[in-house]
Image 1 (cartoon, rainbow, N blue to C red):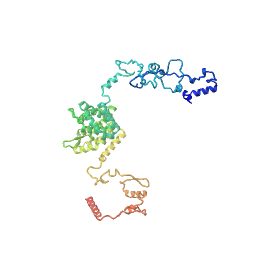
Image 2 (tube, rainbow, N blue to C red):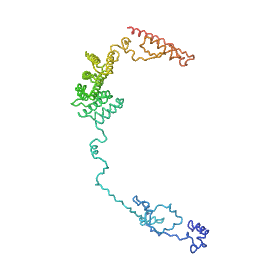
Image 3 (cartoon, helix red, strand yellow):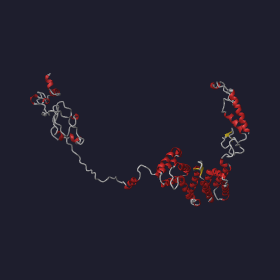
Image 4 (cartoon, rainbow, N blue to C red):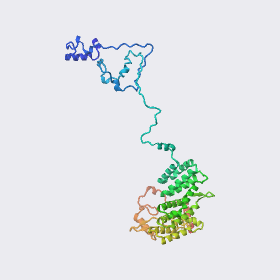
Length: 480
């Protein structure tokens, strides 16, 4: 048994296989003196000197600038040493340091813990970059863009860009006016601080309101809000004054614009409709604090109508009809308060155009419909009569909002028909809207609703007396 402990691991197995094949034992004769390959004397490493006084720190790890793994694993060609008994196979061995560095570091074992550490010198890559090198620009890069970018405010838009973006946003989403106009006005108060900036703001709003047809109403509301909330008041005039000056420039060229080419008339018509919206929405505070409309716009609209009717082409007449539908009722009320008959003169001029002008048949129909609309007080209930006094005899629009019903034969009827009550009762019986209840609320379905059965139909005496008194008083007032 003592012999088994003196052998190296695996030595007995190699001998037994050699005996079975006649190879490595005394009988095989392959080795002299009858010894196998496992019994060769092991080479002991040379003793390492011990450093007295302190323990050696662990060796340093390889720096990142060490040669690649392929170069580390490559060694000088030559005879390979046989593996030590019990060593790991070649695939499982840990990677070794480069031969050049291992030559400087002696082999260490359990007895070489006190050896002095050695520093590995790794090769250093030399860079050709220089701090004095010129700035790099990619191919296709333009220096003009760099100059224009540096001149601006980088990520911040200019005043014109900010205002134009907000106007486009209102054009696409007009419902956001109430929620975003306050913040927009606050931003302008901190931004618009010069006369030129205020003039640019007025021009941007005017161009948007006259170039986009659907923005005239929203533009007028925006002008009214800014005229009351912008704090800047330079010597050249506030926002409302500058806006009216801008409109006056177009107003003074009304006769030439009405007789111009198609593109000129189109721009003029957009200005006319925007001025009509301004008259309805622009509010001016009076001396007593009450809000009134601008009288100067009222005079301007009257002259614009004269310019349109002076050149009675189709597009001019259509613009006049739109303007009167928009502002006719308000203009007539204002003129009546001042004792003027301007609306009568306009209607008379329309009738003359229908008789004499060479306009299309459709435009003549539009003008006649406008005259009919004005005869019905612009579709409104008479201002002198209250709702209680309105009857089918004195109010042509009494049945305007009444629903339309159909008989069993498909004949339509409304509340204006003389036999409306009979037809409506027949409709109720045919449709059977209330199958289980009579007019007094009695249940006809038999068992009835348990919840309704518990309700007492009798009225309290005090409530009944008060109700009768209310009915008598109402009847007396109605007869007065």
